[in-house]
Length: 114
Length: 109
Image (cartoon, rainbow over all chains, first blue to last red; front, side, top):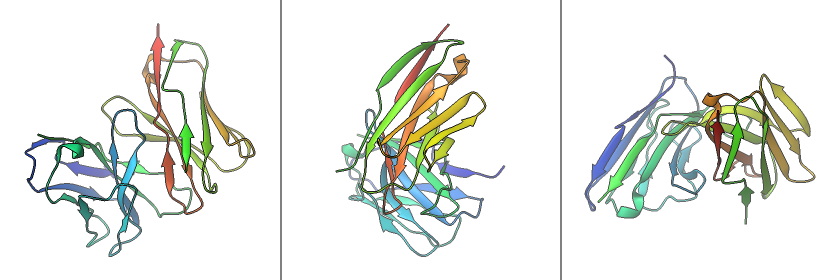
C-alpha cells in the first residue's frame, strides 16, 4: 500500500541522548516535510526538502537536522534531546512544493523526552 | 505576523449541520486547505480552495472569500465518525503552509 511510514511509533528518550526519527515514502513525491504538533498549537514546520539532495529550514529548526540522500527517505535527527522537544512528530510528502498538491502524512511518532 | 484563527472546540448533534470557520491574515495567498484529524491519527486531506466560492464534495463543502480572508467548512448529515479535529491551512506568498491550531468537533447522539 502506497504511503508514508514513520518509525518508531513512540519513544521515551532521556535528555541529552541522540535520536533519529525515520520516514520513508513510496509515492515518488518530490517534496517532504517534518512537522511537530503540540496541544493548542498548529502544525509547525521543522525542516523540509523540495527534492532529493536539498533541504531547508522551517519555522522551528533549532535542535533538529535532516538529510535527503534519495527520494524516498527523510530522517530527522535530534542531536541532543531536551524536554521541550516532547511532541508528536509527523512526516509528510507532496508531489511538489509550491502548488496545490495536498500533503500526505505518516502516522506520527510520539516522542517523550525526560 | 501571519495568523490563522479557528474556534478551539465545537459541539453538534448527529444528523445536523455544522459550519467551522477559519479567518486568516497572511503575507499573500495561494490557496487554502482543510484537513481532518481523528484523535491519535494523522491529518488527512479534505479540500482545497484557491478561487472564491463553494466547493462541494459529498457531505462536506468548503467556502472561500479571499477579499474577507475567510473560509468555512460545512459538514452536513453529521455522523459520529465526523468527531475529529479540523485543520485550516493557508498557502502564503512563499508557498509555505501556515496552519491553524484546529477545531475539535464533538458530535453528540
